[in-house]
Image (cartoon, rainbow, N blue to C red; front, side):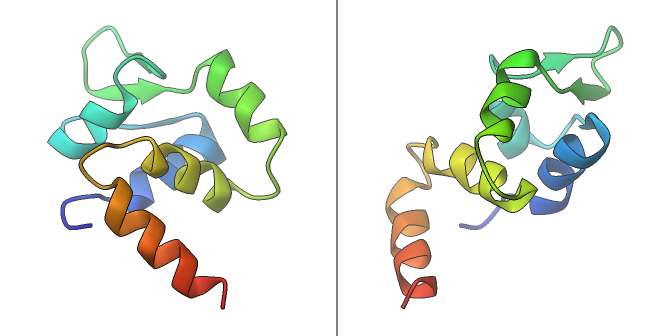
Length: 85
């Protein structure tokens, strides 16, 4: 899962925005978060807030986003399965 910066994704859920400009995170957030007018930050969307409300932690919300990434899905699932044992 190289290239994914977890901290900005966690920051998005904890504070409502995170920096844009990381190609991997920008790809993940495009269409589910809102870019700021200057494209330097991502702003959390109602869609993400609703999804977050159904989960226990911000970490679970980040995991859900990562699980949707077709480039990371297999590795992410394998890693998640080993953490549950």
